[in-house]
Image (tube, rainbow, N blue to C red; front, top):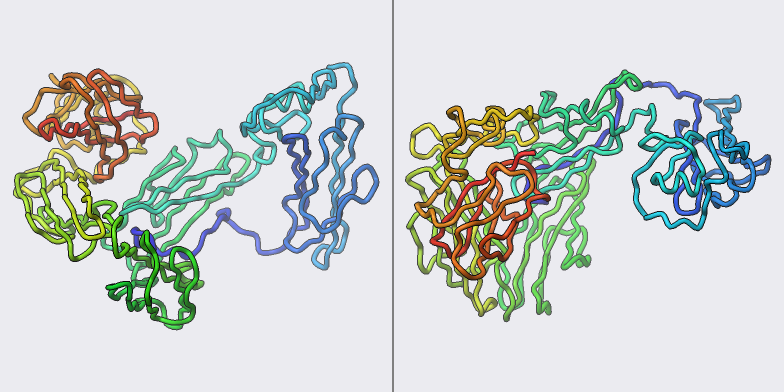
Length: 547
């Protein structure tokens, strides 16, 4: 499975109130894109066999959609009909629509004089609904290919329909959820819920941290809206079972190109499939032997199973090659659960017989350590944890680092409360600056509380624009807060490596800069970040992105 220990059960897209009986309805939508007209049937009972008639002639049977060359509709009126009859709907259900280029005078919905099939429209999906009820991929195609004289933004299929979809991605300790396929005008009406409690509103993207402890009854995340054209409302939901219900792990050893591995924690009677680098090597067994392996670049061993309760559950482990090229890829952080001072770190894809040196960023070091390490911090702060690694399979060595924020450790009230931070919270845009206890200027109290997570502030701007976690004021960044990017000032001559970490210590940006360079932040979400100039007295600073 992914690092996030959610196990997916089911994804639903359903109105608040469902209808048990079959409705004998039928409709279709029309789209024009790159020389073809696509007509798709909608709102008809599952299993119904459709019959398509174009200009009185049989066109297709049994398909849910038809395609017609766009030049056809530009030459003559086109009458499109689709119908079906079934045991549940014994009377024929039919719908027809005429696609007509208009009266030729330019005053109708379609003006043939506008049509220019040689026009070069870019391949851009920015749909508009023409006055003729046809969806065009963009305004250029609506004018030059369809000849329509008016349109509205959005596809015709979204006008008055109740649709929404939910997608998600797993990361290390959190997940990102995105809503799509809803009317653009209803963004402000979107409501997100976490186990039936409102989580966020007015946004199409949320970030959810892995629950700890995991709720015994699992986690349900939904997004939806209500509108005048969809009064019953529509929601898309995804449910994740507690991690104990859908577990799978690999245990074993690999030495001298030979290994024995066993899967455990899986559901009873689960049918296991083993793969190496994506190729199936065994099925239906709980163990697998690797004999005289020949994988010069290393190999990824995975085992997975599928069930109605858990969908796909997977466990994977990467093994470095016997000689050369096998270096760790990153530092995995084990966040504290009870004692906020105690942290643990592990190298991803490291070997046990290796030469490792850890530096925890507070002056504490471990020489000749193992591929994992733990450390107890004595006070709160922002620290850069670094490690140097050498082994037989990584002869040139590798140096890795990650930024962490330690809070709630020194017994005092922390300046930053992570639980306050909601980067998707919608704050008003008036400028009523406050200076947070972290010495960062926020545009108003709302941004200080929900974006910075600060626990105290005073009215007015701070004397400095950033917070120096180390006593090294030699360099600076501005403006803070920012929306688009930062300018670096005060660096010594030369080229320096800059790294940016998010609030969870993940590296989100790395590049080489010189003094006075501008660093773009367009691709980053709103929130607070840690910026480090590598080699400049290990100084780090905090910056805020507000949009």
